[in-house]
Length: 252
Image 1 (tube, rainbow, N blue to C red):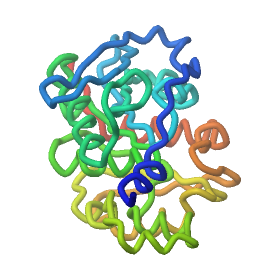
Image 2: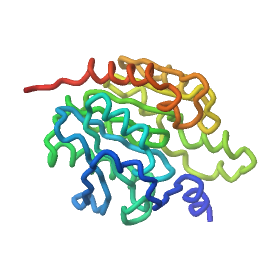
Image 3: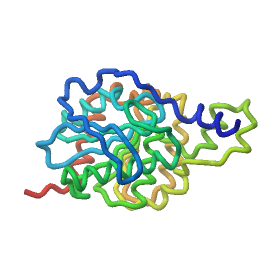
Image 4: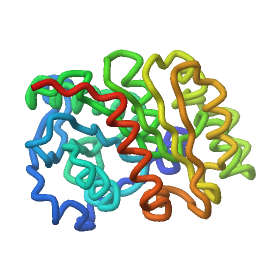
């Protein structure tokens, strides 16, 4: 019963096509077999010499994030996005470990199938995707990490969102960003909505304080959860472009 409750509250996959990839002429592909997974991915911008590995959060699927894809496209970046098991057209069921394995499979595809070197890869994680990105980058190199609306750990989130459920005391504390952030050794750019009611902005400040790498934090006025791209508009687009330009190494 506890595992079922944890699954229902932690993972909220959908299979709806939201149309977010339509304008980008994205190539869809299956991948992850070497990791024991059968996942759906998409890639666009193959002419670019650097790429964003985009890792979405615990809701929706890869077709939802048109504003993010437009941002990456507008600054000349290629983008690989993917769905976790049970999300979109990906097979299986989600779990913390399967999310981590999915990111490793996506990174491997970007490197070894599409040919991007670590210094040409920026990892971008939204909300729970930031946790997945942080775990990934404990094991593999990249040019930098961007997080958006990412939390400290699952127990802190549970206490914040569901204070009336004391059952959380019996559930393992997962997605330990508070433990992984101090070990990050890459440039970091954090984005958070000032009015985020899902992941409070105080968690962004807590994670930022834990980071010992080169870092910057942008709080977007009026933004809530995962709409900083829309509300931050040109200043945020310019900040993301500047971060990528500073940290990516492009070879001829």
